[in-house]
Amino acid sequence: MKLPTHDGLSAILCDPAGAVIGLDFDGTLSPIVADPAAAVVHPDAPAVLADLAALVNAIVIVTGRPPGTALALGATPAGPSLADVPGLVILGHYGMERWEAGQITAPPPPPGLDLVRAVLPTVIAGMDGVLIEDKDRAVAVHTRGCPDPAAALAVLSRPIERLAEQAGLVVEPGRFVLELRSAGMDKGRALSAFLAERAARSVMFAGDDLGDLAAFKAVEQAAVPGVRVCSGSAEVAELAAHTDIVVDGPAGVVTFLRAVVDALHRGDFAG
Ligand SMILES: O=P(O)(O)OC[C@H]1O[C@H](O[C@H]2O[C@H](CO)[C@@H](O)[C@H](O)[C@H]2O)[C@H](O)[C@@H](O)[C@@H]1O
Image (cartoon, rainbow, N blue to C red; front, side, top):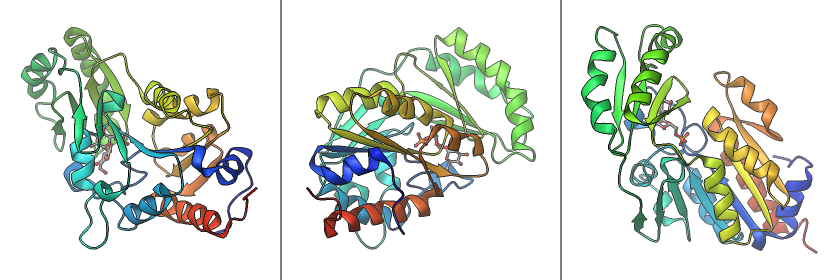
């Protein structure tokens, strides 16, 4: 793949040691599938991330998943797993939970989740194919398995908003999913704080969904050069307009990252 011309990308290629590479998980590193529990990482993703990690300041996965789930889904039968990527940091639950060097740090889960767990079965009663994913500090309601996923999402939207209000939570919309989670953190805040922590001199963020918009905004507003990469899909076609480079889903992300690694090894942009 020939790398596109972009100032933010050039900054990363010229000075990789200063670059923070941020990535979403579902739809970016792992192809979208019907069952959230089966959304394993693209088989070539951990290897390319491991190669890239040796060249850049840091690789950080910023995801709505709990870090433990991203790690479990990041295991590959042959070759390295996500857990093998040197220095990898995972900011899970939209930045609420952090995994680094085998350690997780997180505040206690929001108390409103008990109400959500008690009431949700009534809210979805009679709706064929709705799936509840309990993530300990958040609960996601999926409609991908419904006969008409978009219609089911529309039906659930208002009742879930009301439930979130009652429980002191917020609703995070995604790809045929409505997630009830605590307020006060998003991928943008998480990424900005990480850039400051690492004294980043450039940044890339790759994502596929509405929850990634905050991170794209953080790249835009960062005091350092940056590039926003869209893991493109027909499902979230509108996301491309908020990004600089569009690739074709997780396979496209892996090909793009491999081209970055190859360019760095060749020293195309070195001093
Ligand atoms: O921030 P992300 O890493 O993108 O996580 C966002 C949500 O992704 C997951 O749901 C999505 O992927 C599933 C598996 O491919 C798919 O079945 C579902 O339709 C998508 O919405 C995950 O299950 C959620 O918990 C995440 O919050």
